[in-house]
Length: 224
Image 1: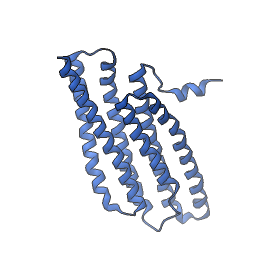
Image 2: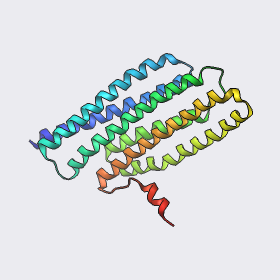
Image 3: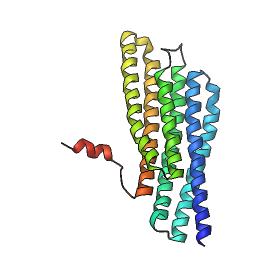
Image 4: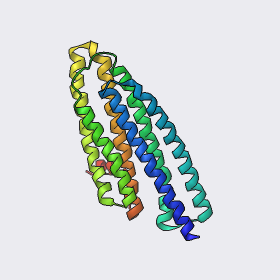
């Protein structure tokens, strides 16, 4: 009976890994739409979104059934509750990829506003955060999870920098406003990807150490 349960847990973990790979690839494709000016990639993004959505429903269903039928305790019950939350975070990462793709459509209406340097770099960091958060889950590696938490600061810094630069373009030439806003929105989409990856990393720390680190930003802000 225990062996069968362990196999079910492993299968659930593999579903999360697959979902993570799909979500990460969606971010890569969405950025390629912008960088390569190739909107034909949008169809692949939408197809993968459907896969991600189906996986979320499947993971939620399996986690509920395993909890009800097996009545797990300790780290097993933490994993089952965490699996549903991580699936939700990954589904939202997929949503952000769709948003990036949609915003890229507006950015591509005219010639490039400026050389694309900051946004692709921000995308690379966000993608890496997603990948590392899932690797931390598989390896039960809290050190890697904490590294993801630190990388969130770098993503936020890129968001602020991109906004400042594009604001100068909009102030100098109103004709750039639509393209600039599209790029700003894309930077915010990538920031949200980083936020969701951070949430996954926090879940990993909770799973392994049983220690709650969510809402740490709010607690820091309250310190005099």
